Length: 151
Image (cartoon, one colour):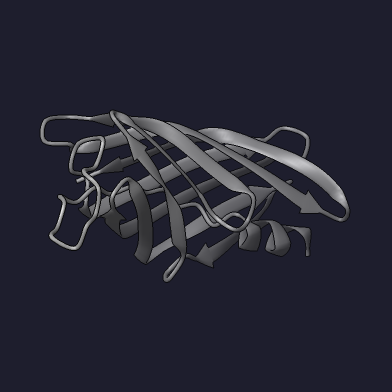
């Protein structure tokens, strides 16, 4: 049961996007254009639970000004907790965040935050750190790791 709850809680997808200004009054984005289709991967772990999780997904990112949203179009998250494995689909998961210059940050509604750097001209890689604080049986556990997005 613990494996299922943990896997369901670890919806790992990161994202950020930037589009140009429009005549509708959007402000000029402060950063490179990173809107569009991306491939996401992440790896996080918690030593106390002897848990590791790896997320893989295809995502679409959209931005209004510096605010970003990312929607998972396909993908899953696989976890191994104390020797027991599980997999959770991620399709439809939505994340929101901000782009500021060459930095990106975002989070989900399941206790995960992501921060990182935008690389390339034009932008073709996002990389950074993941931090998920999850509650299982009344106790909080911190999962730490890395994430990467490429196109």
